[in-house]
Every structure is written in structure tokens, then in C-alpha cells.
Image (cartoon, rainbow, N blue to C red; front, side):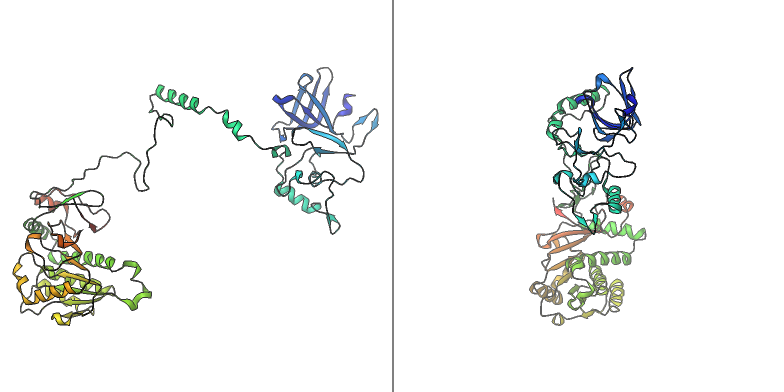
Amino acid sequence: MAADWLGSLVSINCGPTLGVYQGEVSSVDQTSQTISLRQPFHNGVKCPVPEVTFSAIDIKDLKILDFGKGSTRNGTSTKSNTTPVAVPKGDPRTVEKISSPQHFSKSYGDRHLDVPGQPKGFRKRHNSWSSSSRGANQVTPKKNGVKNGGGQMKQRDDECFGDGVDDGLDTDFDFEGNLALFDKAAVFSEIDISERRNGARSRGTPQDQTPSRYRHDENILEAKPIVYRQIAVPQPGDKEYCTDSGLVVPSISYELQKRLLAVAERYGLSLDRRLEMTGVCASQMALTLLGGPNRFTPKNLHQRPTVAVLCGPHVQGAQGISCGRHLANHEVEVILFLPNFVKMLDCVTSELSLFNKTGGKQVSNVKDLPDTPVDLIINCLDCHENTFLMDQPWYRAAADWANQNRAPVLSLDPPASGQGQAVEAKWSLCLCLPFSLAEGAGRVYLCDIGIPRQVFQEVGIKFHSPFGCKFVIPLHTA
């Protein structure tokens, strides 16, 4: 009798602890009261072992899903005219057997069970259609004489969407009930005790420790404390400035700057190299003030900005001429004002010769300057050594024109506050280290002209570069 059930598909309910197993009967031992299933499924998921054996005391319920082809009952061969269907969601792990009339058409899910080599008693999930969305007696519509999903299309669906998972998994998972089983306080307490026992730093519970918040540009790694006074001068000026990052930049006197430049020239940083570096930094700042990449584009060549550079016959004037040359090379209309003098410095003559090769306009009379406002005025009229130039007629005329033009003024290398300043500026660009400037100097900027640190040390200045990745930085009054 036991051999009559071999090959049959059965469903064995072992209670809520062990769950429901389904598979093909491989052996039945009446002596030891055991039954074995080959290719078993546990709660709709295929077991990793090829065969499972059950004892009679563990079996709560046993249901026959399908008789095997060669199995007999009461000595007679039996054909099954039953169709396995899923029981409603109240108990999705069990499967029962119902009789089907001859005119009953298979449901969509049952037709997808007809895969070669796959037992009929096990259902696959199909993402394309839920088996619970249609009634049990609903007939599948036909198309061109072939049922939808049959043949090659059915096999393609099984390969793409069939995952061998029982429809019982459609039951909603109880997230709240599962989360209630997790005791967070106990877990954190256990972690805290373990870390203290091992000598590690305790992280604490979320209530005990508030996490630190960092900006996107802050380093979360521990670093050395920042020293904000990294520059020390032997003779500090009247004012102190600071950078955007908080580094203190003290002001110096003209005498200390003169000594610094003399030592730099002795080491090879000649006047011509300083003029070139100053012109590059000043022109870069001027291009930014004029609009930067928003204005200097190939599509905007018809609106070229106009810059007036006011220069005197001294080193500061040569710096302005160098700046005007770089601006002219960047498609800026430059108008250079330089009065006619009988004798000029060699650096002014050489810079003027280079400027005339750029196509810029040079004027020697204030009347030749534009009557309408220009985009920017660069003031290089003042001299650190010769303050008597302010009494010259050409100087007063140029200063009056700049104050009345209503254009913003950039003062390049302005003198200290005690020497006076005839043109009120919106921005001032200092070299190396700033002077103590007056309120009329506007916002102060500092540019790097390439003086090595050893040169600073030789004149008694403890120097650490505040420029970072830039050559021109803004300064604020400390």
C-alpha cells in the first residue's frame, strides 16, 4: 500500500513552527512511521536539500495535490482530474485540491504551471499579472486561436518573470510588528558595555551624544589647531587686516617695504619681473571687475569694455602701463594717460614701448580723455617718494577728471594714509604686504608678486603665505 503513493505530490503541514512542505513522495516507511519528499518546497521556497524526511508525530495535516502517473489506488490506475489552486490569503502556505468540471478553463496562473520538468503543484509568481486579480472561473480570452500566454509566449514569460516564489508571499509584511521586536536601547547598551570593556571610545546612545554637523568644505578629520597670526613684522603699522579665512595680515611702513624690495632685487627679483607680475595680477583683478567670463565671450565682442589708465612718470606709473598692456591683449579698449615729460625712468620707457605694440590709445592731455563715463578707471598717479607731484597741473586735472567721470576707480599700489590721496577709489590693490590706508582707499586687496620666504626672513618678517590657491585676495579691517 505504501508504494501506491510513490510519485504523488503532497502538501504536509507541520504546524506554525516547522511550516508547510510540498514535494513528490519518494518513500514511505510504515515501520518507522516516516515519509520522504524529493525536490521539496518549504513555505513556497525551494529547499537547498534534494530530499526531506518527516516523522508522523510532526505531521499536523497531509493533503494530496496530485497523484503520480504510475500510482494506483485500490489496485486501479487513477487519473487525476483535479486542479491545484491557491487557498485564500487566510492561510497562503497550504494548498488544497478541488474538482474541476470538464468545461472549466484553466486560469492564467495554472496555465503558466505547465512548464516541462516543473511539478504542477507549485505556482510561480508573475509580475505581469496577479492571480488574485481574476476570478477562479474566468476564461482567458483567445487571440488568433491560441490562448494568451500559451506556447512560445508562455515560455518567454516564465523565463523573464518566473522566480519560483509561491503566491503566499503576496501577503503584506508586518513592518511595525517586526520593528517592535528590536530593542534599540538594549542593543546600544550592549555595544557601549562591549566598547568600554575593550578600551574603545564609546559612541553612546543617540540621546547621550549629539552628532557634530560639518559643512561641505570642512574637514572631518582631526587636525592641528589653526594659528591665525602667521605673519609678524618688526615694525607693524597702524592697522591690521585679515583674510576671508581669518588669517591676520599686519600693515607695514613704506621704509620696510623698500628694504624688502631691495633685498628681493639683490636675490634676482628685478624691477622688470616685479612690474610684469604686478601687471598680471592687476589686469586679472580688473577683468574680474569688468564682468569676467560673463562679459568676455566670443559672442560679446561688440561690447568691448573701456578702461582708462592714469599714470605718472614713476614706478607706480610703469605698473599701470604694464596692467594696461595685459588688458589690451584681452580685447579691452585701453586709453592710457601719460603726460609728456622731458625725462622718464627707463622702466616707464620700456613699458610704454611694449604698450604701443598692442594697439591701445595713448593720450598726454586730459582733454583727450573720454567725456562719457568709462567702465573702469585705474589710478596710478600717486608716487610713494615724490609727494610734490600732487601740486602739478596735470595731476590735478587728471584727478578732477577721475572724480567727475562717475566710473569706479581701482587704485594700484596706493600710498599710505599720511601721504594723501586725491582720487577716491572703490578698490585698492596692495603689493606684498599692505600699507595702513585711509578710508578713501575703498576695499583693500593684496597681490602676490613672488617674493620668496627667505627674503622676508632677512628683513625680520616672519611670513607664511596667506594667498592659498590665489594670487589676489581680499582683506578686511580687523
